[in-house]
Each structure stands twice: as structure tokens, then as C-alpha cells.
Length: 212
Image (cartoon, rainbow, N blue to C red):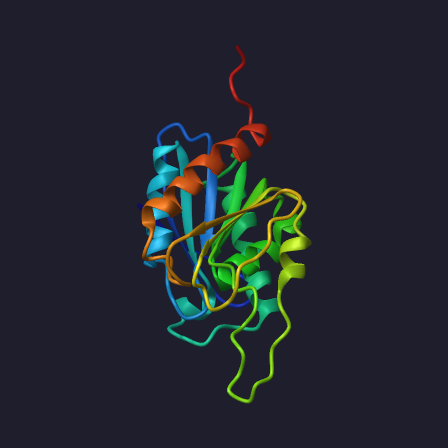
């Protein structure tokens, strides 16, 4: 594993690179709003991807690198993420078809920037569809439009008991329901099976698989 600091318009981000031998593609994942890259689902998916010959970059947003817990505004997250992807595409992950994604807030960032980053697909772990109802009883609007705006294949892996709700399937969007809640800790086997079944089919059309 190699760690690289990458300059962005909002301060340095940090990419933790796990290189596959003779990689067939790349997977770049972001963390949740209050968590880091050591989240169990990110670790599990990294193992699956490496087993499929896919290099992985786990990206820490600048606010995390700076030691802050509170996330930056959405436009800053998106700008920093896009800057990281561009530099990875010019460097360590050059010429590899790339799937982007992340858990929770990181999944939202990947959805919003999928076109700008040229992603071949988007992997959403615990997409926070709709914040739980506030104590006052008011309900925040859902974020389904962020998923619907993605024009490349999407896989959402969602806990059946996730308090943020269950995104619906859609054109090009597969939703895998697994046991557990927003942490995705309860059914690692279900999580990894869903990613293992989806990821190769998304990367193969975007890359240059051998003929024959």
C-alpha cells in the first residue's frame, strides 16, 4: 500500500493506493461524513476488488486530512474529489477504466461527479437516501435525484434496516439489499458477493478485454 498526498483547491487530500498485479481497472472510494477509510465495508470491498485484479484508491477528503470531523460543504467535497481523480488518472491509475464510489456521503460525492470524472460506474455503499425525521417531526427531502442523474451503471448496497431508507432500482441501477443497517457490518458476505458479481461486468466494457 502506498500513501500519496494530492493537492486540491481545498487543501491536500490523501489517497491510499492498493495496487493489483497487472490491474484490469481501478476502483476509487471515498469515506462517509464522520468516518474514515477504515470503515468495515470499505475494507471488505478493497479486498474483493484486489481479488478481481482491480487496483483500489481509498481517498481521504481534505477536511479529514486536516483533522476535522465535520464535513466540508458539498461543492467543496465535489471539487476536491474531482481534483484527486484527475491526478490519479494522470498518475498511479493512468489508462485504467475506473469505477468511483464510496460509503454514505462518499457515495453521494461519486454520484454528483460521475460525469466530470469519466467514471465507468458508481458503487454506492449505504447511500443516505433520506435523513431520518427530525425530532420536530419535519422531514428533509430525499436525495434520489443524485442517483437518478448518474448515466453509467450504479450498484447500491444497502442494509435492510438502514434508517436512511432503501433506494429503488432504476435504469442501469442495481440495488442489493443485505442484512443490517447503515454501517453494513452485519452481512459482509452479502456485501462482498454483490460487489464481486457487479464490478467485473462494469469494468470490462470500459476497458480492453482480450479477444478470443
